[in-house]
Length: 149
Image (spheres, helix red, strand yellow):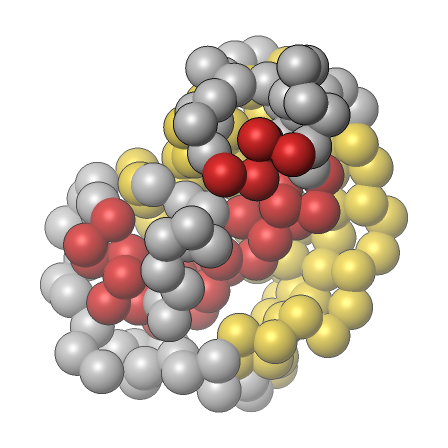
């Protein structure tokens, strides 16, 4: 897999070269900031036409918390690609999720901001501190680890 040169912002086309995910399960739209080995800031616009929202609380759709965690994990995968000196990441496997806290609901029309910091790295294992926010409001905070092969 050819990794695109790191030119920010990364759009969906560049993200698809880093991750195996595709619509409707590609849960980040843009990477606006990335420092290899340190941090990433990605965005996801929540649309009312998103297939998952059609059946999740019909009439009052709420973006599922588990997809917020998956969006953070996908952003970590993009960070992992650029943190491994151009070595492709074929698989990102979550190895642990701890201290997942969900603070507010996310509704259609809002934009999720995913911000992750690498707490440490040992070989192919990464430990992350991830936050998701809408505007100035924190909606989720998760600490997790992942194996990137």
